[in-house]
Image 1 (cartoon, rainbow, N blue to C red):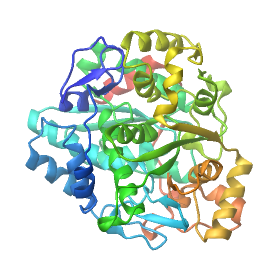
Image 2 (cartoon, rainbow, N blue to C red):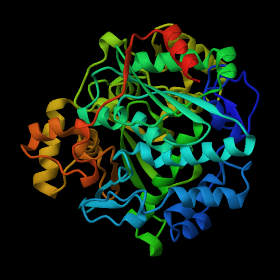
Image 3 (cartoon, rainbow, N blue to C red):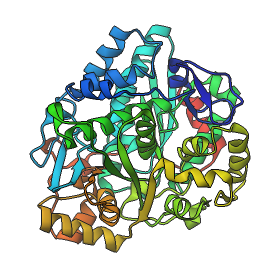
Length: 479
């Protein structure tokens, strides 16, 4: 399996090379040259597997430069009930991502049972183990530069803390995350973890990561790597739970692969739902991929109108679902690459506009007629919608939702189809967003006992302006 850039001006690479590299040298994102196809026989066999063994079967289709025995050992080390132990609603920790039934044909899928109570742990724990394995084999080290709008940062830091040959420099928007999210990141004391709060929005932090990654000389000299979802390994790992969710919703080990299901995905950076798109392209029977945004609705606008109009930081709203306060969806480039028939020249032209601060409009392009075959629909949610949906879920189903999953359920209910099971992917546990849960329900969300009082711990963070040169200097002083 070789990987190509969405912008077509980088040589094809093997998996382990792009794992450490992040962005392609031409500024594009890596994707497989073709998506491996899954047969009916594969589906029949895979539904009987444990989560770790399912992960091996899927990831081995994308990774051929790690010996099979080593890859199997890595995924079995990653996906254990001990790591993903914070289950709720009667979920079985052994399933890793159990379903919670709301009513007939409507489920949420628990993706936030890992150490930081967010779905990012599903991929990030694997990424940490892959990094350690590859760096050890090569005798190399890496300095990870990332940006987070809320959950990626803590998931990355918890996955990489204490790993030898790895340092993490994580940018976050100063004061924009929840108190719990800030505490999870800033309270870490590991010597290889550095937190930088940027005076701006997430998109400012993400722009810095891209600028540093596009400086080939700096990137090479200081061994800069990425853990944001621009890293293909993150997306690949997320493909697995779509298969798992499908199997659980259609009868488990003894079920049938005759039915289609739909997935609703709260979306900010497009990485999570991009994994669903790839699962569908591989052959998983997905009827619809329902994209849910909050007030920062750049992605909803595209799927409704064909116009992709990234917003400036000043135009980006600070909301009660902060992990989706994103107006430049970096993974969206991967989908557009597929939508335009994998024509890299078209992608280069479109992203030259985006990087110049302009919008692009595909509504009159020939590829727009092909959009229905990718089965995307979309919707948006507001703070009032979140509160109402959190109350609905608690009162009707006896289930407490976090703010992002509430956005997802609100949009899912608008797009349900008769006879088609709908699975809403959970984003995080409600404990991460106590302020809004109190506002909606006037109760305190339950959090794991070992995370009680985390906000009272000393915090270690440096506040900096969104200045590329200053961030580079900070990294150089510490590597």
